[in-house]
Amino acid sequence: MNAFKKCALFTAGVVFMLVIAAALASMFFQGFALMPVAIALGVAGVIAVIAAAAVWLLGERYSTQAQRLHTYLDEMLTGNGKNIQPVLGFNLQQVPAKIESALESLRAQVKTLTNQKRELDVKVRICEAERQHLEAILNTITDGVVVTDAFNEIALANGSAARVLDFNLTESQKRPIDHVLHDPRLIKLIKDTREAGDACLRRNVEHQIGHNGDARTFQVTLSCVAPEAGKADGGKSAEGVAGVVTVLHDVTKDKEIAEMKSDFVSSVSHELRTPLSSIKAYMEMLVDGEANDEQTRADFYNIVQGETNRLSRLIDNILSISRIESGVTKVQRENIALPQIVREVVDIMLPQARAKDIELVEKPSPLYFQVFADRDMILQATLNLVGNAIKYTPNGGKVTIEIEVDEHAREVVLSVIDTGVGIPEEDVPRLFEKFFRVSNNNQMAKGTGLGLNLVKHVIETVHGGRVHVTSQVGTGSTFNFSLPIADK
Ligand code: ADP
Image 1 (cartoon, rainbow, N blue to C red):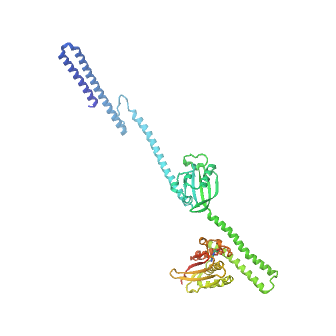
Image 2 (cartoon, rainbow, N blue to C red):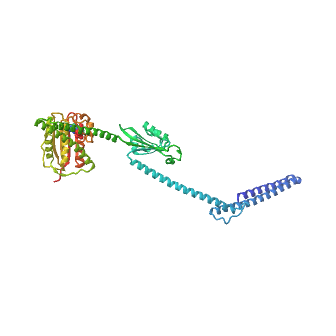
Image 3 (cartoon, rainbow, N blue to C red):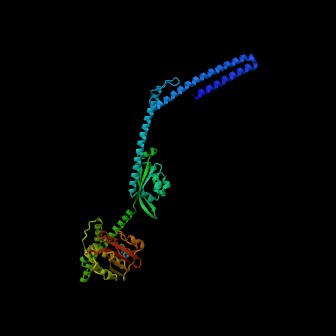
């Protein structure tokens, strides 16, 4: 029995009892004078009983309908739908089919959306992978690259750019360039390029960037990204350009080399012209018969010979370096004793040393240890070092050549020690660069800045040895090279 029925039964019982009690009480206390009231109460009691019965029946009916609704929902959920009875007079037979079709279309929509989500997930993953790939490529580029979007925010950048422009790469993403970069001119260049709104625009600007205390020169190339390429931002930048790609190429070295080359060309032309003019002048005097006596003619011939030798040395140096650099030089190795090379060098250089009143000392050394090397090349390298020592030592100075053997390191070390002008400390690291000349010493002697470069190539590139220098301005310099002792 449900609560509805219980309530109806209880209410009817209570009303009936009250009515009977009231009728009996009135008959007992008032006699039959109150008979009409008792009858009215009796009728009321009967109505109450009938009402209770009606409520009972209604409850019964609703309970059945509720039961049917319950069954219907069960049928619906199990997807059966065969046992469906009418509920509250409505025939629900059609409802499951309709709900089912509505559910079917919802299910189809859910399926479509799920598939779309899956596709988008895949696309997002592909995009992420592509982005990482792009970043990896960008990071292999030695030039600095900064990609900014239509809102002047950093979209991409590489490690080189972060290093050169001094910003934190991981924190730069999606941040305005004004907050990330500290270079007002570069910021303006990027903004101006984007605002120009010309997708075909490409600007090349030379720009100096102070980096770790020294200013370096960069070739900055700014290119606009066409709007189609920027669709990834949701098409917000449909007009103008979608962003700017800024590439920073360090041209400091190129500029230095270009400067050196032009210095070299003028220096070589000068070096070539000087002996040539001298040769030309003396030859003209000889041809014109201006050298009357035998002694004068001999002196002129000597000068011409000396100048010719100088010319050929210069040309030899240039050719030797370029051959070693291009790897086409022929190396003829043999076991050689360095003291013998030193002897030859002293013989060649003695006239020059004497001309400047320089004492050329050859320290005695053991002949026993030999090196496996190209004789002519080692002779050339030693000549260059001794020649420099004489050139950059004032008159009356001393140049010493000594050979030591480091048996422990299995090396023979040849040193050329002079009492010359020395080399400023800041110039020492650049001494072996091609065409480099110490500006302080330029007045002392003419040169091309090729001699030491050739020494380095011969000793280190060709023979796997080492060249070393120590120097003090006003006191002198020591240049030495070491070569491995030859296996017997
Ligand atoms: P260069 O033809 O100018 O002598 P090198 O390559 O032989 O070219 O030498 C490069 C520069 O190094 C020279 O210009 C000179 O200033 C400096 N230098 C070389 N050797 C010495 C030395 N023994 N003492 C002082 N300066 C030297």
